[in-house]
Structures are given as C-alpha cells and as structure tokens.
Length: 352
Ligand code: UD1
Image (cartoon, rainbow, N blue to C red; front, side, top):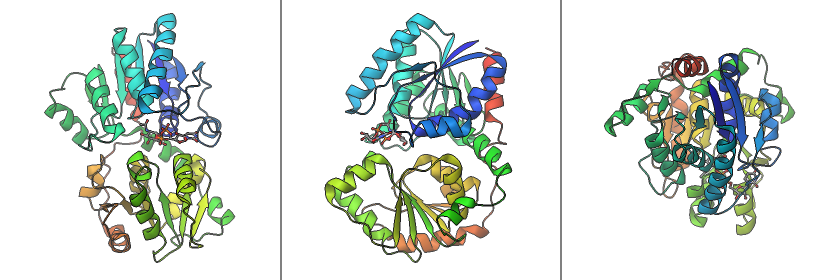
C-alpha cells in the first residue's frame, strides 16, 4: 500500500518515528510535514534524534489563527494528494495538522487512518477536541491506544475499522529506555533523581488566559522542590507579553530533545503538566503526574491514581503534588499495550 503520512507538530514527530520505520518494511510511505512546528528545537531535533526519514514534502505553513493555519494546510495537502494519489492517508493525534490531513483526504475519497483515535476530553472549547472528534468521524482505520478509547468510539456509533493496537508512544519510550543506563542530562543540569519537579505548559487553554497562566506560575513558585521548566515557544511568548519573571526556584529551559525529556521525566519527583503526551510518558516510567486541567483524555491514568487533575484556576497545586507523591506504591498495569503498536498498525493496514 502507498501511504501518505501527515506530521506537523512535536508530538507527531515522536509518534511517526516507530510507525514510519515499521510501515516502510512492508508498505511504501512518504511524509508530508505541514510546518506547524518549525523551530529547530521543536522539529528538526526530533527527526535527527529519532531517525525519522526526511519529509518528502515540506509545506512551510507555520503559525497563524486556527482557521487560517488549518485552511492553508488543507489547500497545500490537497495539492500533494492530487499529484501523488496515495492509497491511504495516515494522521496522528489531535492537532490542526491532523484535521487538515484528514479533511483533505476525505474530500478526495482517500481513506484515512487515525493513530490515537477515540480520545475525548469532552471539552469542545479545546481546539484539540474538535480536531480529534472530526478526524475520528472521517477515518476508515481507527487505531486506539486503549480499550477505553475503543469503547468511546462505540458510544459514538463507530465500530467499523476500530483496532485496539496500544500506544505508539510506548514503542518509542521502551526503545529509548533500553539504551538509557544513566541519566546524563540530569548531571548536566546538576539535578538529583527525585530532587525536582518537572513542569510543562503549552495548551492554548492555559497560555491564552492571563489569570490562569499567572496563577499556575505562582503555584509552581511555591512547591517543596525546585522546578525544571522546558518552555514551549507559545508559553515563552505569553510570559514575555505579560512580563512574568520566574523566581530562582524555577529553572526555565528552551524546549529539549526527546531523550533529554525522557530523562527529566524519569528522574522527577512529580511531573506537573497540561500536555497529553507527558501524562502518559510519566505513567510509562512510573513517575506520578499532576495535570493542570479539569479533565483529561488519558482517563485510565487518573483512575489508577497515577495522575491527578488540579483545577488550573482554583486548585491547590502544593497539596495535589503532595498527594501525587503517594502514587508510587500503587499497582501499575500495562494499559497501553506491549510497546509494538507500530507493528500492529502495519499488519492491519497490510490486511486492507
Ligand atoms: C499544537 C497542537 C497541540 C499539541 C502541541 C504540541 C493544535 C491546535 N495544537 O499546539 O494539540 O499538543 O502542538 O506542542 O494543533 N511556535 C514557535 N515555534 C514553533 C512552534 C510554535 O515559535 O516551532 C509558537 C508560535 O508563536 C505559535 C505558537 O507557538 O503561534 C503555538 O503554536 P501552534 O502551532 O498554534 O500550536 P501549539 O501550541 O504548539
């Protein structure tokens, strides 16, 4: 089968790493990079570090209002699909690049494969929720990371083409963990295992509400341990605009590479984040997580007690973090598969 894979944002590069490798053993694949993330440390570093093949098409769309960004991607992807005529289009997750890829393919009657299908926050004010709901409803293959996400699709009337394959991010994490014996990045930053909190914030719902962003940063300043904070460009921009200065207990870093991030996650006492991917990575490496949101797509991690929701406006982060630390003794089942989701996706696509 000839497959066009659409990527554009940081988490999609990570997911493409194992899937492209597995797909190319059996199928013919080409990559279309929309350009949604374009800084070297948000994009190229992942291609280098994770050995992702160079994109055959780079669209250079960049930032913009959601409609303009998605629309520009839609037009540019459509052109490539018309000239290349792939048998299927594969998209990942919930970004504007995902939606544009799925919509361009559906309009050309090219079947869509959605990796990370069936996730829901039930919060339609998040652009990601709109993207994932529409993409699922346009897809012919829906590859879900867990049984719960397949059940959600069933509740929405989608039963055909649904495959529980496990989480592709577990493929990447397991592979890297095999080769990590020490945590050299912690030494570089003079950090001790368990001696810091790792924080990330990037979602529009967090960064675009001034009060909320200031409340979270103030709460991070009051934790029992120092905080390491790799700052997403969107968040850095908002902090500059609002004149937010960080106290010495918070160390801001530019966005870090994948292995560095995994080392930081593994060594942290607790992770505090609004990221979807990081909530799961924390679970993979058995680090307790506090999610600065009122809901999450990764409900299994909350049900098992490894992830705690903290209201970003009114929540008491200090007590959420203290409670989270007690999760380390909880049971830790393999809810996201066996680390070979990419192999399963490849086989299912080969069966047509
Ligand atoms: C996007 C996805 C989100 C995903 C996240 C991962 C959507 C709606 N959101 O959010 O689902 O979890 O990626 O990071 O698709 N910027 C740079 N350099 C870059 C990339 C972005 O400076 O390389 C800045 C730009 O000012 C841009 C802002 O960050 O306006 C936000 O980027 P955008 O593409 O809108 O989405 P993310 O917030 O990264």
